[in-house]
Image (cartoon, rainbow, N blue to C red):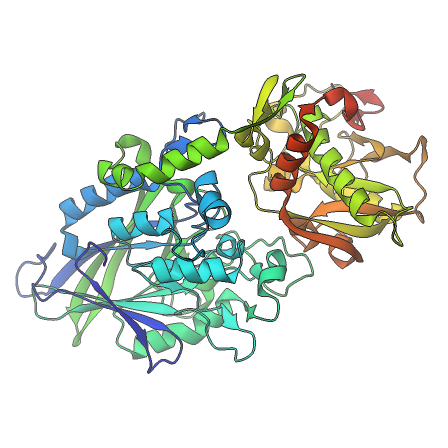
Amino acid sequence: MPLNRRTFLGRSAAAGAGVAIAGGAAAPAAAHGGGGREKRYSFTVMGTTDLHGNVFNWDYFTDREFDDKAHNDVGLAKISTLVEQVRKDKGRRNTLLIDAGDTIQGTQLSYYYAKVDPITARRGPVHPMAQAMNAIGYDAAALGNHEFNYGIPVLRKFQEQCDFPLLGANALDARTLRPAFPPFSMHRLCTPHGRDVRVAVLGLTNPGIAIWDKANVSGRMVFPGLEEQAAKWVPKLRSMGADVVIVSAHSGSSGTSSYGDQLPYIENAAALVAEQVPGIDAILVGHAHTEIAEYTVTNEETGRPVVLSEPLKWGQRLTLFDFDLVWERGRWSVAKVGAKVLNSNAVAEDPRITRLLGDEHEKVVAYVNQVIGTSTAAMATADAPWKDEPIIDLINHVQAETVKAALAGGQWAALPVLSQASCFSRTAAIPAGQVTIRDAAGLYPFENTLEARLMTGAQLKDYLEYSARYYVQTPAGAPVDTAKLTNADGIPDYNYDAVAGLTYEIDISKPAGSRIVNLAFGGEALDPAAEFVLAVNNYRASGGGAFPHVAGARQLWSNSDEIRNTIIQWVQAKGTVDPAAFASVGWKLTRDGVPVF
């Protein structure tokens, strides 16, 4: 059972949609306001998001304590310390703790208990994230898109292991169009005035799941837009007596989308929900991996403010929504909402959590440090965002080899195979000498799988032009600062693709859309009508990043194994990684024909 004062009572048959309801304790809470005859009450809702399998302040890919340039810390063990401090300060009975999704994917800890020692096995383990979140006392969590990466059985088992509800009002059964998960949870907070406060938490996730995890959800679940489902559920929550409505949304606030024409929905719709749907008091924002301490949006219909907050990913921050309520006209109403974030690097890990999961942590550390081969040279991704580096060539080489072998002897065997890869981490490295699982896995921190798509030369040219938007336009002769050269218009590193098998230049002095020059295959100018096989990850192939043509291209082959496993198996089979066997400079940045580097 959760360690806080509420009891999870299960699913409400009356709602017919898996509604979670939580009840308060009999003892009244202490007031945080008041004075005179006016009845006032204050409480705090704490929030995390995008935890991505982080329990410990540990980087399994570097095998050391996590650190970054800002000296952030990560993990639920740190969050637990902050949560206990807030509960002590505010009064445990005057707090709730929620999450906005992307919980069970992202670290080797979460991977291990999905694939190596899976929670779905007979007498399998309890997922470390479920153990930690249960011990900390979460009240509810929204579904994130990465919850679906390992398939529905793993997600359902995780759901079963949690002492709190996983919410998804817009995750619907494909056949009945009824919620496949509880759409909301209701929580009762006792006040010293004899009038309980009912707090509803509505969970929403992002519709991109239908694209990114098509293999896992197609025909089983559908994911309509956030605004549509919020407009359906918020009035119901108010009619059920909710005094306060909070949305936990695995959706950023920017109003942008990477779906292209694949879906008629906005990916980062949290601010639109606040603006368009009346009756919401606050939104815990997720998915975008940005930090927003407090952002206020005015609802178009009511003119009332809605407060949004997004704590930084991986447990680096904890959001606090502070609510001030006043009793008027026979009910509680929200007088004021404020939000802020706490930094987890300001506290120590909670020893209760580190002790609880110490054995699981040590198992994963031993697993990722298994030696699988050797490398004749050191390779790193530090310069990969602006140079064709051998370490990215390794990914492309393995992918192309795998696709060629899969297509051998078939209809498409004679076509040349190209491959796309991104720099997922600027700190990934393969050392000279012994290579471990963590070294190889560090190249590919996502659970993407491999596909083969049929593309033409003209389509590949469009694809590369789209990819090259990633660079900030820099005139010839102007100084080049690598710290400011990439991520134009907020494009993340994982949405910049290098394509191996072609040679080309990217002229960064030219505007986006006209940067690819000297595009060639086999030493000859690329024939727009020529056909190629593109080895591509399933995220990109399903429309992730909205790259042109690839999502609609004919699928020639697909694989269910993660690309990082394919890389690990390739290293194990070869025994030795020799960059001389696969590395080449296929692309470079130029300005008016002059190489930048």
